[in-house]
Length: 297
Image 1 (tube, rainbow, N blue to C red):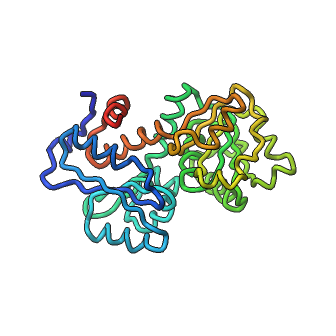
Image 2: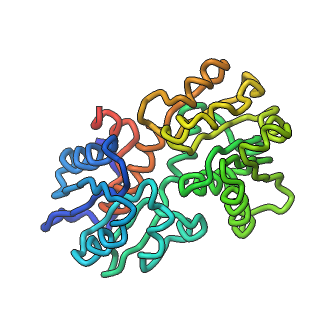
């Protein structure tokens, strides 16, 4: 069995390790399946539940989670940024990104982590065997997941990045955040655009010679039609496209990419890679990717 085990966590749990995922409209989530299955196979006393919480109730729900001293959680849309203010401490990467997708109770305080960043980079290499260094990147969306993706491609040495969002102010704020990251290079060509820039031709320039386009907008946002009206036909045929959503398996964004003869992937491998990192944070055990995929299937 291909599993890396942290030295200080080799003992079995006496009490149940109680975990869960916080989000809104997440009936599709397979995170409970992944973590409960891994816990079962690795013989851990682990219970992982789904907490589908409306925006008006998130504060109360998450404070209740903390009051009960539950062990940890994943955080998904739309709370990856909001949850930061309810945590006692952040990992260095989560603090840099300003978004959290993994929470753990450590020494009686709650610490936030971001495993989306490393999960994304590993998924791009896994799906396309593609090196982001010196690449021209287009990111669609400007939420918590987009922050992790932007941080990742900056860290990997992308040569130019365009962030495209319906709300230009939100995209510009994301660029401003990137400029404050210590490893950010001032000479890097990084721009924010709104969908309205389509009329001026600026968005067409963003797609010219693009190597990788990343969609972080949800399928429901795609259905509004604005994303699907972008000039994807300008993409060169050697480009790659990844949608970080994994449900449905082929999103409208991916369908458009395939129509334009672009190699595509959904976010399932990213889900698995980030889940492995989260599982390691909680349990000290890091299952291999193939082992985890086979367990889930």
